[in-house]
Amino acid sequence: MLLSDLAVTAQAPILVPPSQPTPCKVLHLSNLDDQLFLRFTIKYIFVYHSRNEDHTNEDPVEAIRSALSKVLVSYYPLAGRLRRSGELQNKSNGRLEVVCNGEGAVFVEASADFTIDEFHRVQKPCKTWKKLLYKVDADNFVGVPPLVVQVTRLRCGGFVFCVGFSHCLCDGLGSSQFLHAWAEMARGGTGVSVHPVWRRYLLRPRYPLRVEYSHPEFKQVQDFCNFKERLRPDAIVSSSVCFTSAQLLELKKIVSRDSACKCTSFEVLSAHVWRCWIRAMDLPGVQTIKLLFSVNVRKRLQPQLPQGFFGNGFVLACAETTVKDLSESSLSYAVKLVQKAKASLTNEYIRSIINYLDDKSARPDLVASLVISQWSRLELTEVDFGWGKPLHVGPLGSDIYCLFLPLDGQLDAVNVLLAVPRTIIDKYEYYMRSISDLRSSVVEDEIII
Image (cartoon, rainbow, N blue to C red; front, side, top):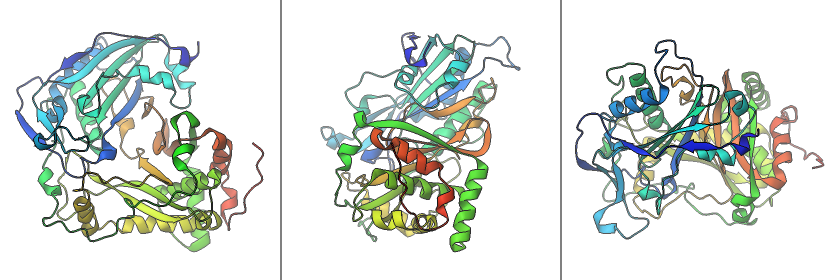
């Protein structure tokens, strides 16, 4: 049986409310939360064995559902519902707020006729994985509950755990914090180790508004190559390329030999992916291109955001150049652009972004831009509900946002997941795996596709 043929039998969804009374109030979102480009659902997939040494006879579905009701006592905004603020009810880009009413998370129990071994034969997300997370019937994003969960039993006795978070309530770090607290409860904990902190007032804009920087991450560039058409959903396919810790070290050594520049694994890998993506796309040399990547700013702000801050605590750093300069320069050139973008994120720059986002129509410029999000540092591979660490962790789907994922069972290795135009996937993956030609200026390879 092909995994693409899998049939999932799901029970009717239920609502899981907090196990104790929680505050009834309306919470406002910060400008970092309430960005138009964050109005979507983060969807994770975890795969687990059936063995449970501590609770041999316990049902994983019941354990996870019971723990959810307990952890929602502390994380009660996730049991509420989104709405547009009163004066802007009819505007699609109006401000959002969270009504904390204890209505509950959506929870679905299901079963599927495949095994963990069959799952592992699929190297990257496929369309049928979407059956593993219940799709809420809603007119728009605001109508989708902030937390949707599905636990699917497998034929072999293992199970798949899928969860969707409203991105405007939390970022990757916030969702990981919640998942670890939830797992802690499922393992028998009586309370959360790290208490969630809302405190959106710490991210209030300054009035009168002062936007003190140009913010290229939001500025539109001229499109010389019809990017929107190239990246149509029906024109792209998922690519997955893995880098071991040894390969990452080799990339860093190449940069160091070329320019005596020291860099992190993220800096060199994001620079490498950016160059490979642009080279494969065959764009005009004059096209301005950007690399946008998420940076945690919890400790960059003054004062710092407190431990346990639950919300969006990241901004997008922006590296910018032209196709010609990126393609014809060495890897170290791209690395330095990434490092410069990171270094620009001072407290004053971040505060200026918060002020800029007071204009609710503002959104990042995605023309000729590659957006990277680093999931490999979220410690998702440590989420243990009592059945051991997951055998697989990743997104439920693949799109034009590039994800750096942990590689199953390999410490410090990274899986680069990105959907690229079908016509360039072979060339893109060739460049990604060709590390030896990075020691000097790039000469375009003749590739027969």
